[in-house]
Length: 368
Image (cartoon, rainbow, N blue to C red):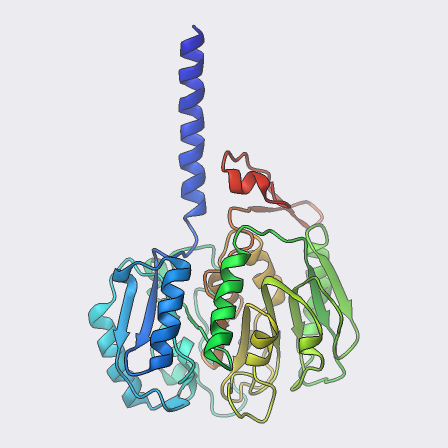
């Protein structure tokens, strides 16, 4: 009888373990992400090699392309030639792309990440202050965007230097399973044109007050903070970006016209966030005007990130009209890997407790 009990117990544990493994492998990971490399670019080759080793990317998921690396923007013709190379090599099981180069970051009127994700189309651009085409991936529950929507979200591995990219990758890896009890800083700034997301901030505080320290601040910047997990603001230049400490996996961006103009632009580049220690950022490569739909929605990116979505998933799902916006960061960063959220009757999110026999999860804080 005792042997039967032990046998039954082992079977139950095995079933729970298999169910848990399935849940943890659901998000985009190193098996479903392809690493795109420009074989004509020594920097790209170096970044790709480092990322491959850091994230254990299988050789079959590394795709070598050929194009001129000495340009900030590709023409549509140039991009179509690259896309043709890619389509011949990518397999059906790939759900997302990591782009292993610092330049180029733009394709005509689209960002490089949106062009690789959506394909080039003027539907995702705008001549003047107009709405652009939205994506079905917005706020979606899926972990298989190519299977469900025939798109592969893309993220650029970039910084102001190759060493900076390597540090970015290290932060992304370090973030996995960390489940930090961090803070969100939502800045209601003096710039009325760029402060349009402030209308969303009270909803963010109400929804996530049980999970994060959510701070709505009527100020243009913060400094000497050491618990930043989310930092959303609206300015063309943000002071003291390097005067704070950012948790591994941190997301930060500033709503403005040209944050995605990475090198030598007239406004602060989103690479300033990356070089300060942030793991993911977003910015426009051409004038988007201040449409809320063209920038990350803090409510969505936070919810997705806290509930078992990798950085690339959470960030992409938060932008309804992403054609003109550039995603930069370490795509597989997953601080809340394995976590699930549930909303209570008051509209506040809480973690849904799930039994785990995974040692890493047992030792992790916060969402058990």
